[in-house]
Image (cartoon, rainbow, N blue to C red; front, side):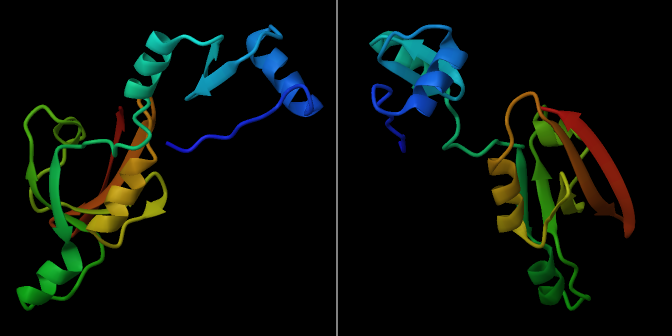
Length: 148
């Protein structure tokens, strides 16, 4: 896991930021996903690091493929996007109203040209975020919003 180390005895700006964040001048201060840990607290650090989630993409419960590649295989005009092949019951994708055959073209203003684009866009989402999904269903543009 990547980290940045600051020596607050030599870096005035870092010291001011630490005091502003924690209200204290005690060291060490370790910040994980915006949560400060003052002093060395292995149990708290383990809990925060286990829940950091920054390395795991958010699971939407969708099986997707490149819409353009599937269309070409079927002899149809290619469409850019992520083609939904299956939706897990009760998943975030199901809650957003996604159905097999939908083609996701945009996620929170990020253009989705293929399945990899969708995975990349999902990786940046955090719990509590509002997600806007633009998609095609039966050649008609649709929109769905969900809080994750």
